[in-house]
Length: 139
Image (cartoon, rainbow, N blue to C red; front, side):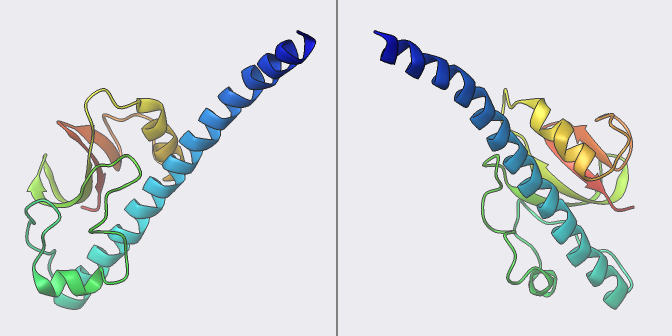
């Protein structure tokens, strides 16, 4: 009986810590994706003097795709969302976007916003929630 109580107490301590670690890991992975992909699109802008054309989903012009070689662009993100390139949408000229899942916990994306060193308001700043997606504004 004492063993069962001890195991229950250990589980009560371990489960919240595991959940927190999982959310932190997910937030770090997503923030890193925004950084890597933003740099790729910025490099395209520098080299060609213009932002890449808008993509459909994560499908992009082959020239743009070459800037994303070796990255996780075509794989699902940590939240199982899809990475997308938004050109002249949502009132911004250029943004890397990640589709959100219905009912997704916003605390993960609040952590992403902290990691991206933004203003901690998902309605303003460089990192925002717009419609069904989180966007990282480049211009």
